[in-house]
Length: 589
Ligand SMILES: Cc1cc2ncn([C@H]3O[C@H](COP(=O)(O)O)[C@@H](O)[C@H]3O)c2cc1C
Ligand SMILES: O=C(O)c1cccnc1
Image (tube, rainbow, N blue to C red; front, side, top):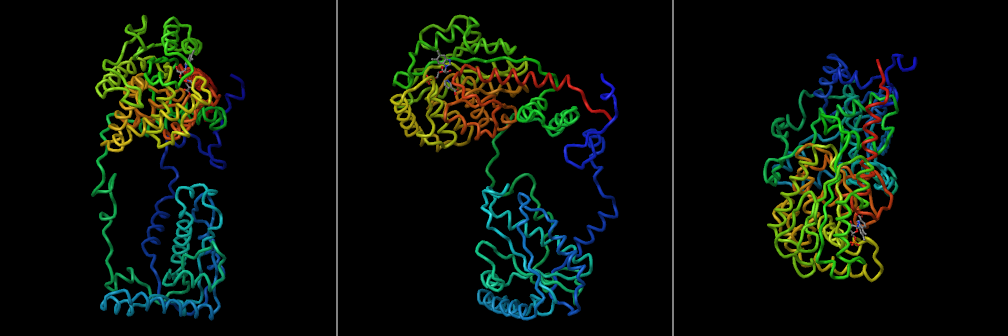
């Protein structure tokens, strides 16, 4: 070890300016607390905040107004967009006009209430627009397209909520200083926008009256006026799910790693003498793998599953069905591309015959799991019977549990015609359009592509109603496997389930070598936490399948190999990454 490495130093990351290290945080998770006096003060301010309606006319010192505005500007905002604009109003004529608008809005609202309720509304002192010497009109600048703001593409209104958090910050600050604030929304928003000349795309959240309060209410005014009562906390807090009418949770027998294991994995990575996330996407994969294993992983097994497909007779592959058997025999002999990829990556190999064409099973395959019933071509008949699907899943589970003993479980498939099967499954599971789903496979030309598209569209038309009527995602996965098939895909789905049950990480391959991950996750949602996308291949539907899984691929090499070749390349890199983590220097304190 060099002299430098022996030096004592705490790693000043992961956040710039954060002097704590993974160890400090592990040893004292509550060490960020600000102490009892701060907590008590905060509780006092939150508890004493009131919506103030009556104000004294005395002026508000500039520095207090500044403090209130600054607190608003420190609020959290979606994608750090800071969309709020605060229009400070002191001009009396503007306040008078706003008050007039509010008076009119109040009468308009009373028209919609029962007589008694309307009378009580008119009795209420609802705003202090005329009396409060200041108004802060909060506007939200929505002119940036939602897609461009982190977090708004999915929740486009999050900019408005950000402005609401700014309002709460200002409110609490005002209260702590003894100032009163009242939030008035008794306006037609368009009238308020006109009053201030707001441009198109800028909207208001209302008017905040600010001044010294001419009331010091111990509880909310509307509660005192008998308008409403405070709901008990227990009525607004729900545990785990909405209590009524929530759909039954699918029964899950598996679990992802718990929070202790996940954090232990990132703690370990944080202690490396390297910038955080130095290995990028690989680091995330290594964290995921590390969180799964109490024992160190230094190897794995390629599970290579082969089957033929009646659909290949419909002209969807340029290759003869006999090629599947040839490649599988070469795999058994250790010379196929997949077998060699496994060997050179330091992985073991299990070859499974899941229905390679012909009466005889492939000699030398470690496992035979051939469907027993007649099989269909997808277009005119189901690929598999449901009982065969269940048998293939069960056989796969056994193989998966067995493979898990060696470390990584790496998926590979062989099956002439299976990119058509896989495209159909991808459409059924992700809603992808057949025209967008079919790819070149082992080398299609335009005519073959056209046939693939037709077959996939016809198969989906045939199976669509049954799939739409499935009782649960798990049931839909089994129905999809039966209708659209792929005995090798069914076995590999079982392999994923067995491997996950035994606690192993699973490395996915190309399209047909990734669908088992998605199918298994539909059967058991906890599966997802165990999956690693080894690669993204050239097959068009592959990206959609990985997106549905929420997985970013380690490699994007435009592979067209199948056979687990890409997954082996990725596994090799994962094993190297794990070794690097074990051997690299750690920071010391
Ligand atoms: C010699 C050979 C070896 C292969 N190894 C994997 N595949 C890959 O191509 C096949 C799927 O493509 P398609 O749907 O177009 O038939 C599968 O066997 C897949 O693993 C191969 C294909 C060939 C020709
Ligand atoms: O993406 C794949 O998995 C793929 C592509 C072509 C041939 N075989 C498999």
